[in-house]
Image (cartoon, rainbow, N blue to C red; front, top):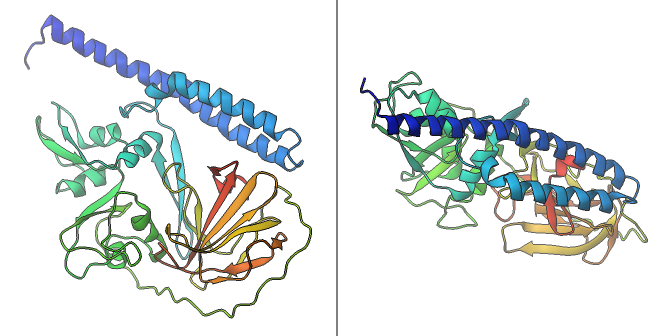
Length: 371
């Protein structure tokens, strides 16, 4: 082994110290404040149940503290060097039998927003596992992307490895491929095909039909090696349109009920998918999550398809998208639990599901914190 010069040893020691500092800051600042945010959301939710008597004060103070911390520590916490301790964002995916959990690291979300495929040049002694940990990925993602034999493949010094922005596989579209056939081929359930559409850096020849162009590249988030899977069918059933009558004088309670039955096929990801998707192959009624006034209804050209927005009069607004049938009119009131439409697959959708958003003061919140 070549003996290091004094300057090289100094550079190495500085690098080690830098990584130690980053790891220490992440473990001592980022993780505790993630727990703090969870506790704050629980407290604020309880206060909202009291009709917001103290909610604004607590929410505003919490946001001021959060902004201050992000300004001071954000550049270090969100740095893409992933050798330290990382907090995660949980995404829930549903299949026929059970819910499965995936975790996206905070650092991974930053790369996810950029969408770039980067090239890593291996250093002496590095292993696939170390490189995968550095970028917050599973080892298999590196194996599949770089055509390696398996997880134990040796990496040579100077070898260049392509690093995807998120776990999964990158594919080149062949003649006859559709997002449904690719989802099936790479191990996704049909309800999870929506992830391919929602990945913001996948492009389509037609945003309504999701038509693919032969030869284009596509990323299958959380895709795995090809394997045979059973075929399922999204059959949208016809529902006779019965309008729900005006509910009269109503007031939002700040307490939300589940707007539909089914499994969560896609969870809340800040800046990427700021809603939850509730899937049910048989469709079913969509319920008003709380009492309020219908402020927007009809077809949306932004990808929502048939959608409804309800203003609950207390700062909260809920949005229901991809409906097959709308059963309310703009301007009318609805009570909590009233049927406002039927689950469907209109707009930018790959299967029957409800896209459900909770907004407060214009900000998109995680619905799972309020249901």
